[in-house]
Figure (cartoon, rainbow, N blue to C red):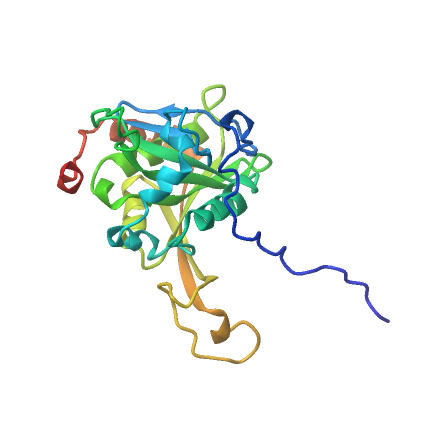
Length: 279
């Protein structure tokens, strides 16, 4: 007999465009399954990233055009070495990525990282921006989520920015209601060769669960495993491969194994400076 199978391939990606650049901030729909709010430590603030540009609003999270400008420069190309996307050649490419991978996905959101320890300069609203960090693969059914899309600007490397930002998200996800989301598990997935990301997960107290081999396909220009076999569909012609290290913190680690206390300790450590940001 013939079998009916009407499934089609993945939905085509959106055409490159300046999505929501002129959307009024109050009309921008974050479209995320979990409640979103500003998260703050003594030295870092996380704000939901709103991809709008409006000069009447001083918050840098409303200035996608300015935020995109921070990605420019040869020194920041290294940020994308182990990421499956980027670098973005145009603002429209950046806004299209935000629309497709973040705003249109109800299981994801992005936060802007602001270093509150730096002096505020009203004339330069982005002078304290350290990068952005996201939540993805959120499930309110299984109470799980992942910290990812970690993009810390080169000027904020070797500072407290990534540590505080990651700790704030861990705290929000694992803290019982009403102060947190009472999730059961938080994941951190990293390219096997990305020493910075894997090192950060270890310092933050994540447990290394193992490695997923050939976890995803990467573009030919990305760091990854070169496939030498052309046998069958989707081998060498589709791109390089990535092995992924899987890390996690669970609610038991948080409440019974001291992870909550260790995160609080990390949030109160001495502020670290990068001399390159001071120049």
